[in-house]
Image: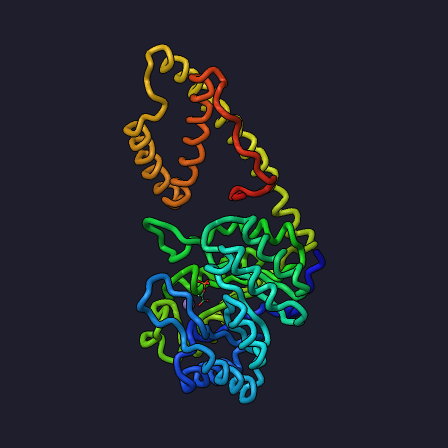
Length: 371
Ligand code: PEP
Ligand code: MN
């Protein structure tokens, strides 16, 4: 694949606009509020894929006329979500500049293929959001389907992943997946949709800064003239003025530098980190050795591998320990889960005399493989 950039700019790519086009006034007020804020693309959802029925499901094709007015009055280019062939045809008719494929569409290869087929023979640039579930191959599969339809200008949008249970995010970022994508496709423009990751406006700025620090090429932000009155995603939208302030407050850091002073300073730390990483692996290997010894005893006494009480006690102790060292509870939970899973695997190996099935084959460099 030789994917071409859509934006091709040194500046951060900024895409902003309301979650949904609601009224002509609201769309135009947002666009006028954003026209001098350095954005490359104005967004507005015309057809809205809502999780539950009964919520506002988008204004439909009528809103495409408002996007046309945005282009005429502000000179901004516009983008909206397409989820089926009809959406594609309508958007082409009204001159939408860039299409985006939403997270609930990327998840379904039938739908992605339908929109890809409808785009065949056009030269429209397409942004592809990650699927709602953390399935790296499904995301790449969508890129491939669009590319095979003859679309060469493709970018991706990272909007986080659905989760069940407590999280400070609406959609957990699992940044590593976007980082894997950047590494596998150098030059692919990767944009972070901080609004759908956060789901709330109070952590938007810090999350946007994090995206910049992870070398994302830009941001997608939901902007509304009166966010609290928005017909969808009210809690995460910000006013055009707040958007402007937020963007001004972000620091765009250089990817690297050949300044000798910088290199000397990080060299020492990096050496120490390498030593620590080696020690960590040695320590974990020693832990696994002990786990296997316990496995031998459990086998003799016919005791189950999983001991929920012991796991809970361990987890609570580590959480407290982590707090003292300013390690986040999320990190401690992930670390413990990984170590505990490996311990269970190793112990099962001992207890079943190595008869259990081998681990699944994974593509190197990625933790989240689906089929
Ligand atoms: C949106 O951008 O408004 C949207 C519906 O996003 P997602 O597909 O990421 O849920
Ligand atoms: Mn939204």
